[in-house]
Amino acid sequence: QVHVVESGGGLVQSGGSLRLSCAASGGKFDIYDMAWYRQATGPQRELVARITRGGSTNYADSVKGRFTISRNNVKNTASLQMNSLKPDDTAVYYCTAQACSAFGCYNPAWGQGTQVTVSS
Image (tube, helix red, strand yellow):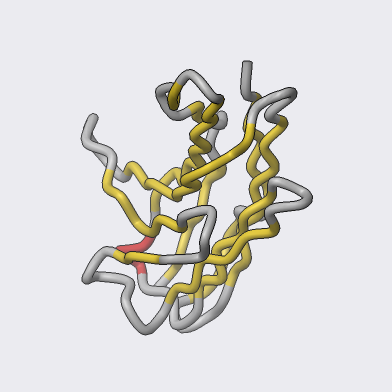
């Protein structure tokens, strides 16, 4: 069982920065892909950024050049540095972590979410 905890959300003015952190406890499993999603109004969750165990990244077009995802494989942590924030970035941000074993990979585990609010 993988447990994911996010931290670092808050209220920031437009143009400001925030850094979100995520810690995944994988137990006996290795943590492979880690990602950040966000959910504004409505049920749809949007992929913001993903990073593989090897460090490959991909970003939503809306955050490219402003957000940076990074990770520490030893600590099973991931961070999302968010710069030049806009009111449209306001959402609940969720971290996911995918555990894998010799038998295959499991569905990603989700954290409880952290609120990011950007005021204009």
